[in-house]
Amino acid sequence: MTGREDRKENDLFFTCSLIEYIARRTKNKRSVVVNSLGRVLIEKIYDLADVYHSDNIDAVSEDFIEKAGITNGNFDNVSAARYAVPSHWDIGKVYKRLVLGIAREKKISVVDALFEAYNSFVSEKIDNYNSSFYYDAPQNILNAYIYGIIE
Image (cartoon, rainbow, N blue to C red; front, side, top):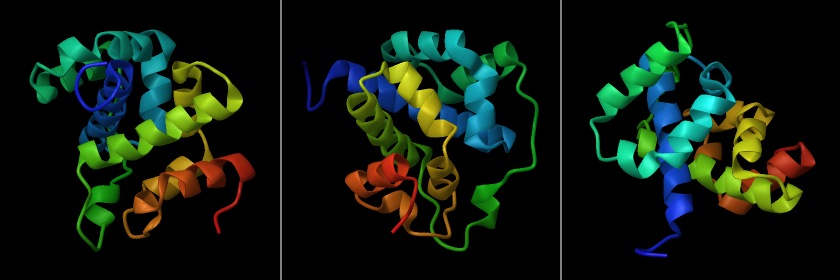
């Protein structure tokens, strides 16, 4: 470990932040982006995140949009936000914590947990920037996923 957090956790943070960036750029739900990228490209991003984070995020996102054939959608939670919009880095951190929690709880790989997180009802709640859910305590977000309810 170098720095404040584990290197692979930082790679996951970048991966989740890039997913968010691509979703905003293409106006798609996060699950659409993850499923369009698929396992092979997600694993590539995660494995090479330390390289990709040094590049321009516009160029990196464009490359993966093209590789995955992601087309523009009509989900624009940024424009719909009535309050301050969290950055793609802020939301990347929320998803990173959720993915790590799912991987730990279910004893599955980080990539498997990533697909579970983004394809869960919790993802739709995180992406509603007019609610306070995305900045709730990480354990509360994980508990919502585990128990299937939001308290």
